[in-house]
Length: 106
Image (cartoon, rainbow, N blue to C red):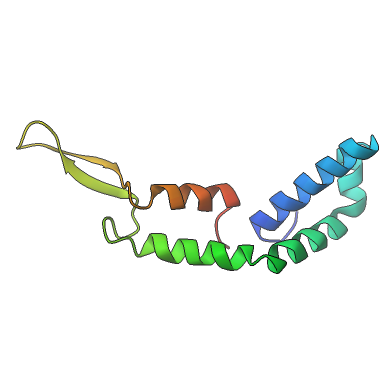
């Protein structure tokens, strides 16, 4: 099991899969033989484009959401003025979905 950031491992596995398909190799065998190399290359590529820093900034921004305070939920009124419901925050839910897709932060 890798100790790499989840986004790095996700990128490395995708890189391995594409390499295996292009070369007609077994993906599991290729990963077992070259895991460290794929992780190193993925880490370098993500660092070069600032992806991990952008992910950290996205989480900071989403945590500071003025509408929900980073909880991803807000209360809104229904047609009944005495009633309100809990809904996803429209201001930050998209950011949280991207963070989740990237594997979150360590």
